[in-house]
Image (cartoon, rainbow, N blue to C red; front, side):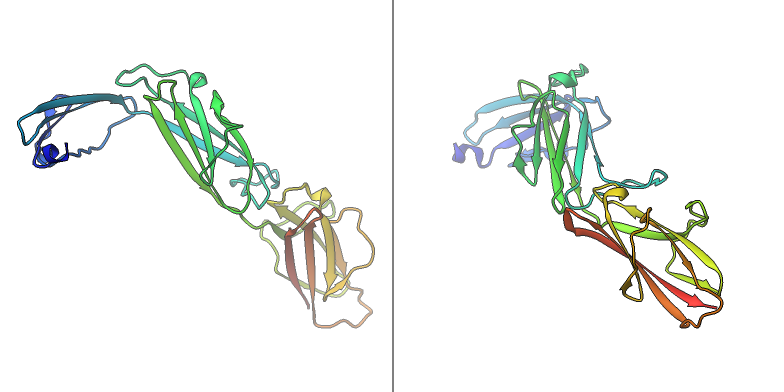
Length: 276
């Protein structure tokens, strides 16, 4: 009863070693730093209640873990070396690799026999959870908290892993290109100097859109005036100022890229052109 528990004396043992600092009057909790993966521990507690009852219990467990990873199924250039960042509406593929041991043993459990319960923003997805379902797919809306709970059939070995996946805005970067449409310099442009009768070629590279670049809507503007016609390759453009005409000292080129099925998925790049 509650009156029996008050004033009780607790003796804690870890792998049969008395934990003096954690033992004593009313010390009914015990914590310790677990060791490396696969370490086996037995925690034992002996309790002497205020009315002289002697109680004892123990539990054994093995340090287990799981590796939860994810990838975004949207677009980035083939030579992009970073992690592809998801934008709103991106399909996410997650997978978890558990290393879980039977309680108090060195026996690793078969991952295919474990139950995987998946949660997005604390909402349980029963349809895509179950035995052996270590992979999970969902659509990212804004930022999402993904969690998986892994357990054996007896629910005696349980691991939870979670991760926050944040959305990023799509981007486009403009580079100088050669005559074949290949990037010359890896530094993105925001300003370019051009003399009369000189031609500049540009290539625009999109990042983190949910459609391939060929399915995006592309628009080019010069000083906020949309250029006439549709280029055959809309992410390539050329600028040439004839030597025999008067031109202003500077102008601005704007590239706008839009997902035609989702207006909020868009990006712009501005380049200031200075005449020399």
